[in-house]
Length: 128
Image (cartoon, rainbow, N blue to C red; front, side, top):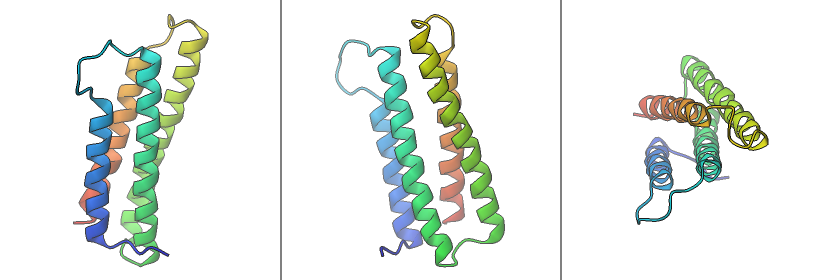
């Protein structure tokens, strides 16, 4: 089994944040992506980042490197992300079903991104 140290976790966290930023930005001029494509990309990359960081945190917990209070906060931030994730998925489905006329997909994706950012920031803070 792969053991995660705090240093490896911090490197992983930095790579995940950079990857999330890179996948969210365009580097070459291209036609504007559709709202649906942006939503899929945002939802997918946030889920990948969450899963990788949560896996690393679980490994640190198994090693006894995370306190009960920190674990409680991880669960709190993780739950907020998970709720925002499912809300974004539901908003995307509603957006597609309505032909893009009813829900503010951008607002739900913004909430998702904010929840992921809070989760990642707290995760980085406890591994210092």
